[in-house]
Length: 201
Length: 207
Image (cartoon, rainbow over all chains, first blue to last red; front, side):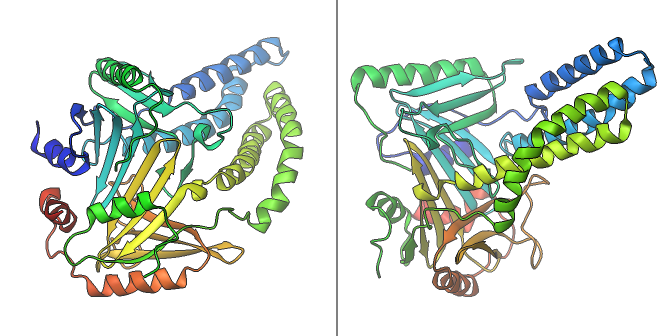
């Protein structure tokens, strides 16, 4: 294993915990616009086109002028989200690990360190968002129980996320990583059906 | 020292990380309810009322080709959305699930909810920037980040900054003084070093 990965794994893992997969994001495209940006843009384009088509005073200039503000505003919003994604898709600062019991995201910058972990047990879902050239975003999250509100809440405050899950951004071989996570979840379900979150960092 | 304010799990996690000579100086929890600023309490009901007329006006603006309205209405909608969602986000902040520990060397934050766990850890030395924000209702948030200049957090290559925050504290003066003392006392690393040999890395290796 890469020396840096080994150092991080040695620091984060509990005694006896084994690494199934460890890796860093592939920073091939630093600014990835969210998929819903394209959907929103296409939808607004279509909406505007339909209205122009039915209007009596149809000019291409009016069409462009109508759409421009929306594109600008949606674009600026998406740029902000893309920058946020980039922060957690940089291989310099981010490391992802899968163990038998946990999915772990380590963010290190200067002397600040944030370690997020999610137990791979019953109720944990692994969802692949995008798979392009083998890379993709993997969301591993806890399914909320009927009486849990915060488990389904995604929060962005003070430049960090606090949610009932962890996101592996731009990981290589994302499909394989998802399969490993699912395998670990199924193994833990079989070995300990009533297992709750393990203690650990 | 009184540490009963935080759970055994948090204390156990921190004790695992302690290096020789490092001692827990303070442990605490945030206030569980986040107060809304008075402005939000006034603006949110207004924003809820004007959202629907704004959507109608946007359709009208696109249909008639009114450039000024086409620009102004989406902006208005954004402000409304931000106002409504922003207050929900503040209300839903995970303060009820957070606990904080300060040692003479580091600041720790621990969030735990439904199995998800986030442990934040930061070195307190001369390069630590302390920012204090009033949250209303007598609560204060303390944000610690690496300083780039005197009052500017170090950027993660133009992607914001990394920090550890102590949210929504009822009595922030005591932890604030402790952090100021730690920042004044602890030595600053002389040269930029790779992660393997940073003070924090050394602390982990020693541990």
